[in-house]
Length: 276
Image (cartoon, rainbow, N blue to C red; front, side, top):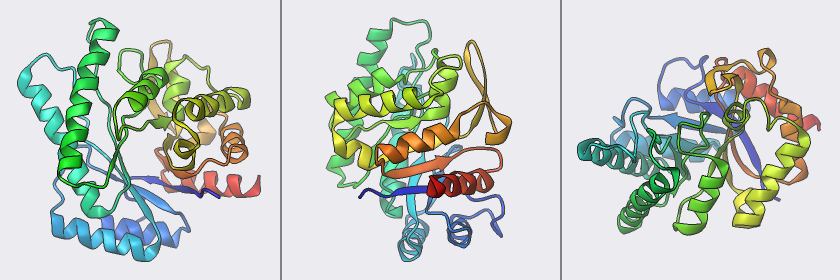
């Protein structure tokens, strides 16, 4: 049976220091199972340090994912900005490979008032080139663009499933909180969560559900989508219904909590899931 692992988006706040090594030790102390290494301001981890952290993660049985820098837009008009975005994704993939992380995620781009189908083609071409380079370098990492929180951002469920079906080694990172915000408060009930999982399975097959890269947190939003993350109990996200859907569909993979209180909500999610 596929294993669902719970952890934090970044080093737990209660870790003794702000390092991946300290974060891994704290994750294990908290009886959590995974951690997302955040490269949001750039990939500055050296290979030897990454490999050391990867060995520790393996010893502690903590699975890793990575989040690429915020400054990524594969639909950038300026060639240098687009090239920098490609470079940042590749740098994240290399660091993830050294860490032994199974998947990297990032926000792929913005529409910037361009035709949505045209933008899809631009981002698809860029990601196809990235996955080709990842394969050429022998990097054992899945490329998982994130389901984003605003309609102005590329990354709807439909776009991600289409990409995953058309480009080798592209997989969706499903951010359930972003989906809730993106739809103005919908996608927040057991039937809707089940429908999302059914769509993923239908489009990509059962293996996609058995090793899914996921994000969840409380979320604040407007009619235009995401504003900021919240603590779960201070938001309207029906996380218990989400967990029930994940359990009923036997979903495996990493469920990364991005709430402001990180490990507290990650622990809440795991405890709630175990009790179901």
